[in-house]
Length: 475
Ligand code: SAH
Ligand code: SF4
Ligand code: F3S
Picture 1 (tube, rainbow, N blue to C red):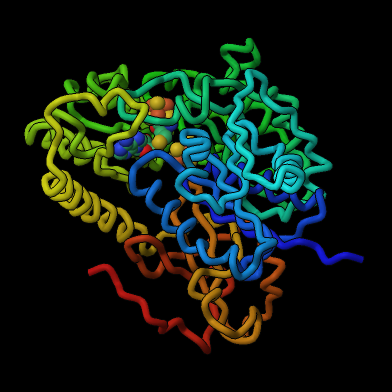
Picture 2 (cartoon, rainbow, N blue to C red):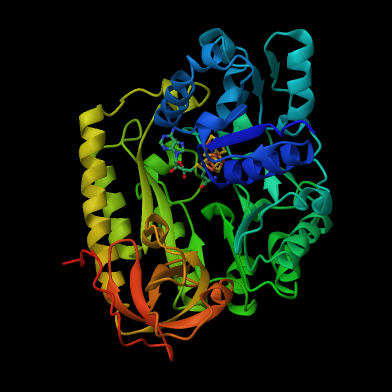
């Protein structure tokens, strides 16, 4: 028997890329490859790339660059560049990195096994960045035979974007919006649930326009169908565009018991002038109104957002309005980025660019504000009892050498509001910890940190080993 070829995938970018990398891995496994987490051992190295900001493109370049010498040492090793930068740059990647074997785009990546064969036949690099109007049907069962299912998984429900925000590269590298059929999505989720998934995050750049073009069901209708899947416990989704956040979707949070009370609603800026230049098609007032209605429906709703600082033309006054909006909403947490020129996006040609040191100052000021909000919110959780879906060993535990059950063990999970909760058990706790994975348990919160909470499972308090580990309490 010939030895299986080992494949290593490095994923840069958003959840879409994480999902696509998972699909790619299962396709390759179905073609006889096996996964490795050691890049040095790989016969096939894939980098799934992101084009959203210049930094992400640099990350790709430094990863590919590191393997310049690899071909000399290991002439049979193959390197593939996939994803959004591959789609954007095509054969330019080969011109810059001649030792790359295959460049495959965001629509074509499912053909990778054939492209690798083609590469051998031609003994030359292969580029496939063709885009299709149809969305592929997934044979969930075949695919999932090779899939390692986690407690929480992503499922893409649509791809592409028709919004054309002026700063954004996504519509160019992912193509127009197109939705998968509800049957296809439900069948994939059901198969994942059968193999152990408890929480699904539905993915799309703008889930609220799900199904519209194709005349399929609406997004709230899809959520209702997903909610009916037996054995599934939690539903999340990203991302909903504020302009399309419909009353029906807001009502879903009150109606569907499995839908987590958390919404990621990227605002980008608190200034109407900047929002207009960004082509976001809502005002700060309209956004705040939707937040108010969400909180009326679900008072415990956790809110997160994305913000861009230093968009061309952003004045101190505009930036101040963004800070004001953050103060008003009080997000649980947020992602914020310095504006980055993208080759295809029109904002590249806008005048009045904000200088890099100024962008950086604004970013730091914004993070300082959010940190104080997050800290207050995290500390307010101490003493409360929360429901946690147990996902596995905590990060700290994974770094420790001893395996589960051999000492005081720390597990991790998340609340419905997406807060990370770590919790410990002592040796004297008579529990099969492995069985806890995938269960929803009650945890009393004892300590708060900036990115996580720490607590003790209710009714399972242990006595001999209190956690004294190296935590830094948020002061
Ligand atoms: N579809 C999602 C966003 C996907 S991109 C939405 O519309 O909300 C994720 C985030 O990256 C965006 O929300 C934005 O905050 C940021 N981003 C996108 N393009 C950017 C750019 N050119 N410079 C800096 N940040 C950018
Ligand atoms: Fe980009 Fe705007 Fe589409 Fe989001 S909605 S992916 S920010 S163009
Ligand atoms: Fe990046 Fe592509 Fe996602 S550009 S953010 S990986 S859609």
